[in-house]
Image (cartoon, rainbow, N blue to C red):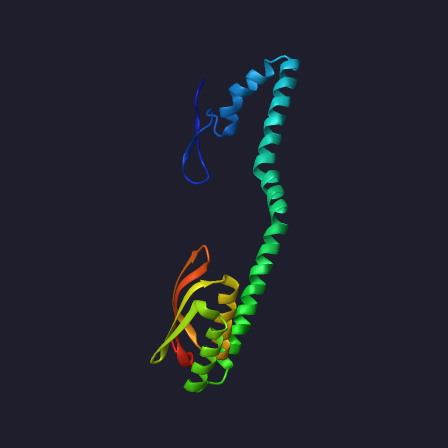
Length: 181
């Protein structure tokens, strides 16, 4: 075979007899395909179709299907979290907008709330802070007490050291009085 050269459009030289591109690389495969019997072509074509369908399923359909299955429960969970965040934001805005409370009234409200916890709670005042020691207090009662202290006495918890034992919660809660922290 003789090779002739001619100038290309962009100034390079291209060999006229060379096969450039994918057609040249696929020529041996095409020759092999043409050499197969029709039954072998059908079997190979069906196999290639199965492989292609499995690939489409694994890469496109199955991930989308899984997302559709998981979306409703996830949405319910996210909606519940959003509602909780909205409730907490409204509570925070309410507490920020509350008028300051005189220190004597804050201490009195704290004493009343702590008295509701019963014998399992003792209150100690230390200047602008109060320490409440709890022993054997129910978790729900502790939650209600903390909400009452935040609203009624305008006290902010600054430190909690609580552990759970067989009779309830034990430990201490340090509160900043007067809404300070």
